[in-house]
Length: 430
Image 1 (spheres, rainbow, N blue to C red):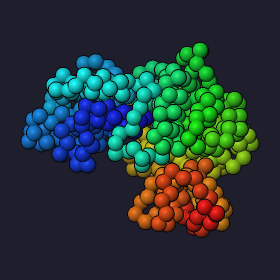
Image 2: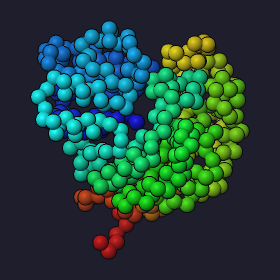
Image 3: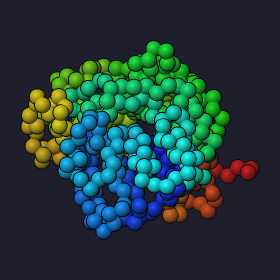
Image 4: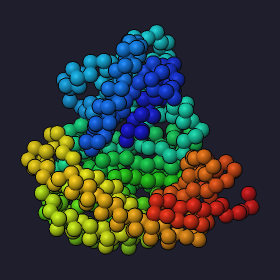
């Protein structure tokens, strides 16, 4: 979501005459787009803000813009007093405050102002920043802002507001725009993406939106994230199973494998319901990859309850686990009503245990690709190797002098590890 927001900010600024600077300390406008889902991310944002104070002192005219979840949606933010050298505070997904600030203090042509304001709006118009044009293969399209589910540990509803679905015409317009600029794969984004349209009965379902996006010429692959077990329905699974452009990869967080912990988290399902959902997904979409999120050390989580999570992951053998240690976020239900009583050392022990388990699981999954030929969409070149992904989101590297950017080509896998694979292009008649 922040990547999509940052691209829109950059595009709007370019239409005011600004150019990208590879060195932040030399920029005339510095935008710090923040995430506070975890404590470590918030501390990183504070640390970066602190390093910008000497820049502001040395060059008082530099504009510093703090954007994103650290700012949130509430007015009278205490950050104004804590960081008085920040010129503009922008809520998540809203470039307009910065654009208006720069317009007010600059000498801009009316055409520049109108264009910058247009690209600051989330109405479907999107011109990729100059530094991305011709190079960007993957595009990110927010389709649901905010969240109304309010899991006990989650700060998102407080920072990004209630759930709001974007009009489908804006989403499709943006997808068409990205396709016209060379983007080959789009990912539809939402905190609970499969709740798209639930707040607006006149909007299509996510499954229907995927079908409409599939009709866009130039878009070769479509993904969506993040799903919630309670809203993963048969219609959506059918869309993934039958729409060729929709990739067989599903991100569906579990968070824990113990029923009491799940209830305390306010997740709304049991471990067995999650287990049966995974079985259902695999039966309907053969060869599908499934990724999950796990939080260890949630308030009150005992050794036995953690073991339930560990055992469930060992049983299901999911393709990827996004792993986090619980950190209380101010204002959330868990922070207000539960003691953060699992010692940090124990959180790390549980984290490392699942990390080790998942490494073995992923090594086994990647090994199943050995000597197979799979279609790879190539995203970028890193040193001498091209980086790409399989339909199931497996990372594959190929060493070649050919220009593979944005191409989908057959690759025979020659080596596998727990995190990536290497392969060679299958010769064809091109």
